[in-house]
Length: 387
Image (cartoon, rainbow, N blue to C red; front, side, top):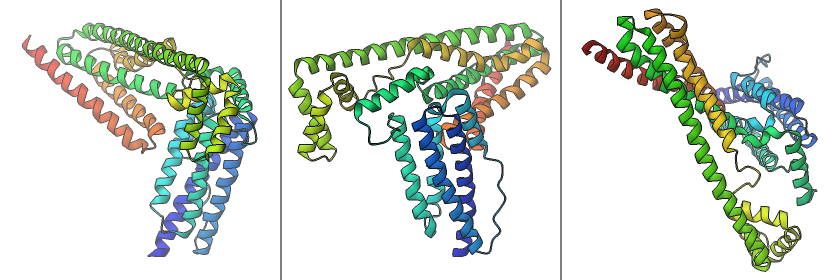
């Protein structure tokens, strides 16, 4: 029985590690920043060591080591997005993948090799946290050096300020909103008019729904993001005023923060004193630690509005397109098929962020959209019959 578990764990582990090798090799080739590239190369080396462990385990069990296969769908999609938007844009997706690995290894926790490999995987999570904080260059640099390296990277790759992986997440969900809402609207109108040959009403309603929804989403995102940004900027300005008016009290607050994290009192005070030597660094520290904010990532209201408008419009156009090109029940059938494919694809794309099965999230999204469209089509049919 244990031999069967060992074999299953070895095959699953080897597949995971080969995927990870492909991913981190690709990220290292894509990344322009030397420090981040070095971090990816270190992780790839670690994953090769893990793969060798599983290969040796299979051989010891008398099994043949399987040939390398094409990377999983999830890994290929993450790699593609990294090529298009940069490695920072896929940070959440890669960390979700790491979490999936932990789940798989957790199911085989009674296999001896899993414990050591799981410990290494935890170190990978620490490396990603340092990368996200802009500290990939190594622990030997001071705070100012880390900040300078991060600013240099931001200047060279300005799209990082667009919200990092949040942009990808907002795009996916914006497309989903447009797809579901306009599919429901179009199907409802189609149910009321297709039988009577009044397909023009479907197009008119679909275009109106697309524009109304897209503008509504854009306006809502702009107002929400602008209000949030102004609130956060106000909080930062208040913290700046306190720092200028009461530097001793603010230094004591920084020391208390590090003391609460486990630093000895003398060491915490020394860290606070060094940070207070640079008012900019001191302000950033207080903003991050006291307010939980990243002053570099307050968000762009116009960026949020434009991306929401485009994402919603793209999703809303999918169920409408067949009615523009075709007529009658043919247009309805093609719209249903095209919408179903789009719903499944959007759901599968969500799995890149959640780490869930692409089939599961795809079918879930399809079921939700299909239910909304079916209900509105039925209501539209009833209205059309009775009008």
